[in-house]
Length: 269
Ligand code: HPA
Image 1 (spheres, rainbow, N blue to C red):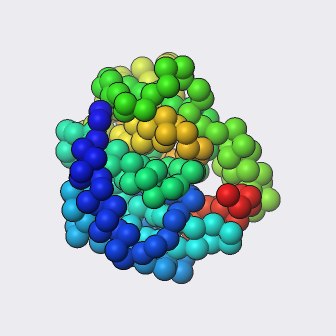
Image 2: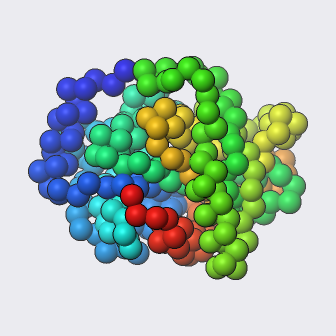
Image 3: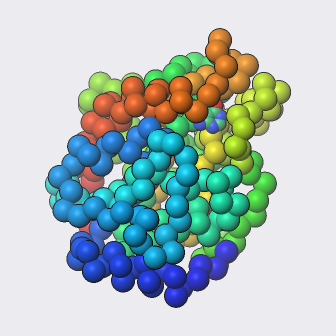
């Protein structure tokens, strides 16, 4: 999926006119999780609607800002919200932020998302460290960056820092496999059962292509899911987007604390 580099260059020019920050860590903040950026002291905030060619999010709960902030020894670039494939039908839009992060110099991607819990031990409000992912979007996307052999997407060192930080902070964190479907409708109970049998612990509609591209760029990748609900057929109530966003908000304090402490624990780049 080759990007239009004239577009990327125009976006980068607009961003660089507003900040000379050279981020080393990029974070994608998923449904209901954008407020993490507000807990940091931002050095710049760039409205995505003003960035030439930048994709426009349409889902409630996904704010459109690029926030630049310092945390400890690190320079962060936070994406408040993301564009899902089901909004745009275009992976070059879904992946645009990762390309921007890469071209601004980020070497680490931390991807967060809201997901439905499939593992029976998971409850609404749990955090899950993504061990690995299964891409059930059934869309092959070639980034043009792929190196042929698929290395593990999620970085072992980052996973161990995240797990140790959660332990030290007393924040319970599950571990598991994230499965992506295309959406936009939630899964049927039969699909959830299929995903469980395939080895999935959580299901969502994002992340897998972003993390794949970041790994192809040679970035170190960490993924954390917020389990906002039990997947269809496993909980007592019918799913809707507002409940998912609300549940994301409820776990945001522990996620915020965890993200801050993980980043502070990472060695300077
Ligand atoms: N399914 C898919 N995506 C989701 C879910 C779910 O149950 N919860 C939050 N995002």
